Length: 207
Image 1 (cartoon, rainbow, N blue to C red):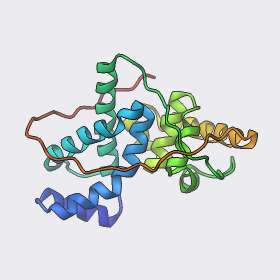
Image 2 (image 1 turned 90 degrees about the horizontal axis):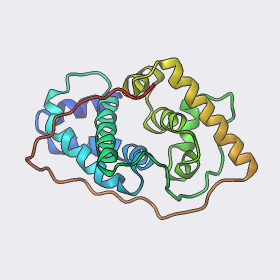
Image 3 (image 1 turned 180 degrees about the vertical axis):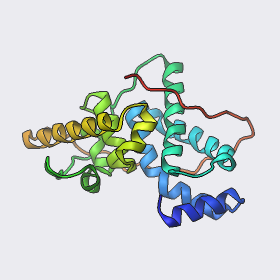
């Protein structure tokens, strides 16, 4: 977490509303892309639930990687939503074509410069679920392999391998010219706090 984000977390915990808005503006775009991959068109609703819980539980955050803490809450809310809907995660979003992707030898961090946009989601939608989530956490959210592994309940090496395989599949799709076409830009609105409590938890992922 950058120094600015760390300062924003501390100030937000002390009740500073502008600092909370900084956290929201910094994290919401990536969280929304990640949730779109998990729950499709219901992503904004789940994102609102996520931020309501973040606002309630922020005082209990005691340090570490704030992005990982936030994305874990988002993932738990998404899994709850999917259980309620009795369906598995899907990646159905039509978005703009990805213009270019880093080569196989590039790291997930470099690839993130390209795929950290709405234009990548339709291509990520074609990946196997484990690879898609690894790519999203590493290249869109920006977590390292160890932190992403804690979120997913997997070993860092397994996350690194899944992300690498996913990036290679994306590169192959682009070479074949299979990139999907455009959609409207995502628009998000900060949620309004509600009093109903909802305890956070981390559920282990399969495998």
